[in-house]
Length: 236
Image (tube, rainbow, N blue to C red; front, side, top):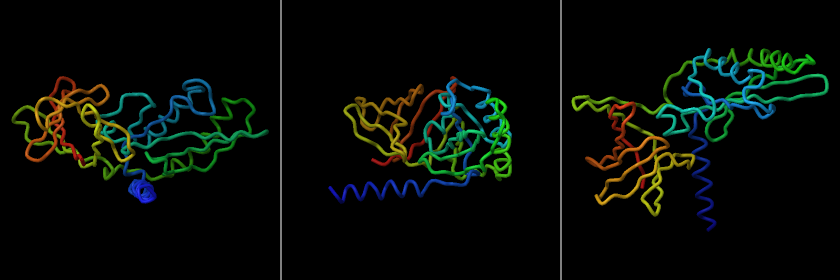
């Protein structure tokens, strides 16, 4: 048992170490719809303002709960998670911009912006404006190293073919398998059929089939009425 626990800890530690802390390795950013220090969705327009800041930087930004691109849904470790942290004191209001990766590793933390405005709206705006100065100084130029390479093959059969290099781990279930990413999040479910090495599959709102062809695992589905073939890197 001790050996199993130690092995699990080593695997978890290695997965954390493997995650990039360079913002230029990431294309997508997710922002909360409600910050923890507020009570309403996009209160004072702070969420929208924060989204615009990241978009101006060059990121592709989504609010939590919005539909993400397929590659981001298949691997949440392609996504950065941004947040605002408030530090309210008796005579001042502080705001810090924090960016983390999928294993809760801090990728960036801005200098704290501080405002002595009494009205909350003005205080948050002023503090965020000051915090954004160090954020604006952050270098970002997406280089795609953290993104799954999507390699289009010949379209002679009218099917778009994409290749995934990210490892997915197959967890046996009563109905077939669940495919887990490196954070142990289920990204796709495979349901047994009467055919060997052939499964019906579901990933959130996407349904299709997973089958083995030429020693490779393939996920086929329709996206916007277009047939798509996705090569999966599965470890059983």
